Image 1 (cartoon, helix red, strand yellow):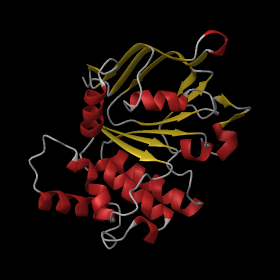
Image 2 (image 1 turned 45 degrees about the horizontal axis):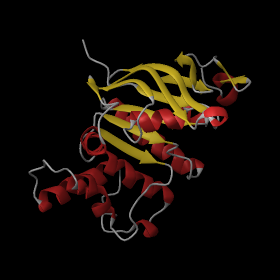
Image 3 (image 1 turned 120 degrees about the vertical axis):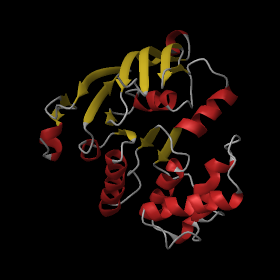
Length: 248
């Protein structure tokens, strides 16, 4: 039986103290299995971004347990967390987070440069990066800089970069937030293709039309998971997902 990619137990994240205390996460339990396509939804302040940061090893919980592929990462130090992020996680951000002075190829290659246990030569890394750009439809843009590309093309570069070290898990934080509707659909199609290849994908979004592409939707509110499943008729912000975007 496959073990979970993500297993979260009674996760809590507290900011501030006294009257200024904020319970960003308030006893979250979550299991995500290999190959799932999951959307985490919720309004601002619901805890979805805090949960994403902890799942992505960008932050630590105040209390609780987080197992990534069976390993308890909730108490690792900064260097250990950096190693986990580089080897096991791929990130896609709303703002792309590309380095403007580097070409598409060099942006994609970056995670390999910081993979200290890699035996790949510089040339092998470049070939791998070029292959990833071909896979996301940018084989003819390898030497272009970000400012020479559209928003959708920049996000494709970010996806190629996220995949370069063959991570166990792709984490996408509002991946279509800065894109027009056509480019957004292109990016969602790429995520579907990754999912079809067996990649585990977790998308954090406030947009029902983006969440509707996932197989499983988690609704968060006030630091808690309010519902978890594939039922598009779960009430959310006064409407069901079926009513909001017309999916069943």
